[in-house]
Amino acid sequence: MIDDIILNALKEDIGAGDHSSQSCLQDSDKGNAKLIVKENGVVAGVEIAKRVFELYDSNLVIEVFIDDGAKVEVGDVVLEVSGKAKSILSTERLVLNIMQRMSGIATKTSNIVHQIKGTGARLLDTRKTTPGIRQLEKMAVVIGGGMNHRFGLYDMIMLKDNHIDFVGGIRNAIEKTRSYVQAMETPIDIEVEIRTKEELIEAVSTGGIQRILLDNFTPEALKELVPLIPDSIESEASGGITESTIRAFAETGVDFISMGALTHSVKSLDLSLKAYF
Figure (cartoon, helix red, strand yellow):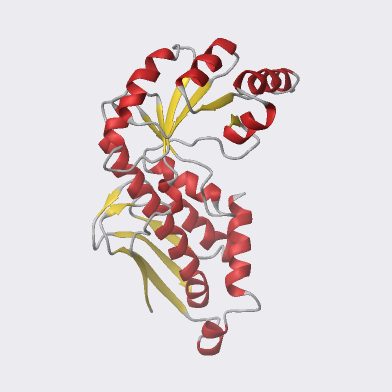
């Protein structure tokens, strides 16, 4: 999947050719470029950048000085690439776009993980990702110290309010889904979203689920609801949780906290690829 993402991005960016580089450089021209940090944070996407260079021009030489997941400061040099000047310039923007986006996600994730340290709660991402590059964004979350929720609609079942309302309630939804999963060649976990205390009690009594999603509850409400969930079922809080309030949610005893903001509204980390010849 990573190679497919990169090759599609190269096709999108270069198309019929990098005419800017072709017009003023010769194939024999050689050069170097350093990836320089312009903003403090957590770097991510180093391995992806290496793969971009490798796929475009296997003769490029990449030397990595700082690995994925490391904290970086302004002026740090993450890597250096050397070889054919045309190849370096043609891949420059793609490498930066990927690393800036991934580093922004990793930095935000790392900051939030630090805020809930010691509570026992674990930070999850969501499916609120950029279409086509979900793999990269979820990799960045892990690099930043978070965890991945389900990758797509195929690796975990989540019964949300619309599913539940369509089939007439929590118990009916769980029973139908449980039968469906039991018939699968490779069963997957079931998570159920609840909106009230009554729905929670019904979900627990029905059984056969692995996680309960407590969506759009206050920390005060969660303190009452979390103890009602048996140890055999995981608990997850989501909805309306921000960096300034997440500590209060984490202290309620929930197992997981999911935040779409890790990927859907993150600020990229400022990096540059400075070439010299």
